[in-house]
Image (cartoon, rainbow, N blue to C red):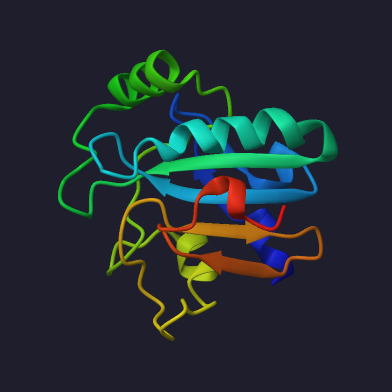
Length: 151
């Protein structure tokens, strides 16, 4: 899975980047939404980022509107919401699809690791993936709080 570090995606402000370009030795990648019951997990994601970024952890939020249309905002609206409500300073990316024909290539790669039920498709907002320095991927349910992740 070495190529996972080279897959390009767009930041919420329109620049092209990749895991390799973001640096870091470990990545927490989360599909996020602003109007979900799990949205308060942003707070835990930010706390994790602040406590572990100097150790090489990069937390990355990928907005997605595929689950209950709970991320309908523009990129600017999403960024403003995250900064104002949760003090988010970790990298936020452009809105993407994480399932289906339009699934972003990064999530196509991540979802090769099945969930706890053996499924590839992401079930809901705030699904989590940890990408380790060696390229290995671990997957966690939206129900797992950021503080409970093995980081």
